[in-house]
Amino acid sequence: MNTNTHDILVIGAGMAGLSCASRLAAEGREVALIDKGRGPGGRMAARRAEIDGEKVRFDHGAQYFTARDPAFREAVAAWEEAGAVARWPEAGEDAFVGTPGMNGPVKAMAQAVLVRWSVRAERVKHEDGLWRVETDGESLTARTLLVAIPAEQAAALLGDAAPDLAALAGEVVSEPCWAVMAGFAGRLGIDADTFRGSGPIAWAARNSAKPGRTGGETWVIHAAPSRSRELLDVDKDEAARRLLADFFAAAAAAPQAPVHLAAHRWLYAMPASLARDPARYDAAARIGVAGDWLHSPRVEGAFLSGRALAEGVLAHG
Ligand SMILES: Cc1cc2nc3c(=O)[nH]c(=O)nc-3n(C[C@H](O)[C@H](O)[C@H](O)COP(=O)(O)OP(=O)(O)OC[C@H]3O[C@@H](n4cnc5c(N)ncnc54)[C@H](O)[C@@H]3O)c2cc1C
Image (cartoon, rainbow, N blue to C red):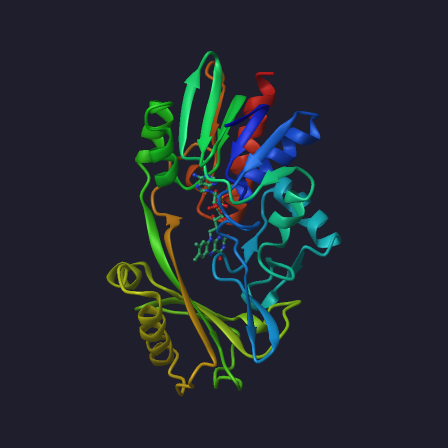
């Protein structure tokens, strides 16, 4: 079994974990991240597909984001300059999307720090003044441990090792969301590129109309929380078919057979209740948590939570 000791180890390299790690690295701290995903994004995911020989990327998680806080606006301006985000006026005058996929800014941050992908934290223990994180086949140790994963997953992971933080996360309940990714041979008879629904469909967007996207007509459709719960245990193909039918009905559009159809179930898509603390850091035990569930259920909330956690660590040396 390998053992690596880090000054700071961050579990979760989504927007919150990377915003935290970037701030710490900028202050000269040694920081490493692990993430169970195969690549950057977390809930700002972009899934690649090939449709009729053309490569496309579906944003099946977050659709766009707004930037209101000065610190986040500064980060967004730097990503815009680097080509990692672009404005998407269709969703609002202050709306941005990642480019060429929604994971653009997460990917940009991940290039500047040490992230190991496809590494899942399975158990956390505090031993001899160090944090020990067990993954499948490895044991990592760190002086400071920061956890930036969805609330339910944080509660399960921290249960025995950090019961106060686990209890904080355990109070949060997240809503699920089924996301459908559909490609069509021709343009659907829907003028607008975004659709805000009521009833079974919460949102849909012409994915191919976002800035910097390639390929033919593609849509991402998000089921409302109640519809997502109803279909929670249905298999992916069945969920995709049913939700596509829901979408055509809700948008009053003529159904068209898709040339590509897939679905992804986000079990913890959005925290419905929040811990109402931008981040929590236990300086004595050197462990902390960040994530949208502590701040606000948005990309900006995740970024600001990560920043707040980094400030907590920096304040205590
Ligand atoms: C369907 C959907 C639509 C959304 N729409 C919008 C929107 O339009 N606008 C907006 O602002 N926000 C939207 N959001 C919310 C936004 O995506 C999130 O608020 C934000 O991305 C959360 O970032 P995070 O870093 O807190 O968590 P995440 O992005 O979930 O990052 C957590 C990371 O931790 C990793 N991880 C989890 N457990 C482990 C483990 N045990 N070991 C190692 N790694 C682990 C995961 O792989 C993941 O990469 C949407 C979310 C979803 C799902």
